[in-house]
Length: 90
Image (cartoon, rainbow, N blue to C red; front, side, top):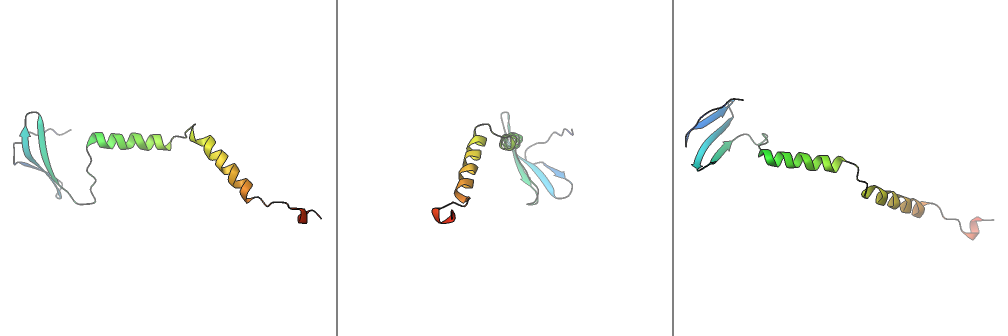
């Protein structure tokens, strides 16, 4: 990890197309301004962690939903099965 010290209005350049500028320092909070191309994804770490955890939860099979899906599939199969009527039984 590269560690840099910066003051307000100083900038850090990453490659040639990303800049991070120190806008304000108030107490223990630092306000940053980030200029980057639109295709560069920039997320706060806690938001990225939350999204990752939610994706893992969504990918796990649910024990509560699976029986409901099975019952719904059975009901649809019964609806679609050809019915036998008296005229079919000749």
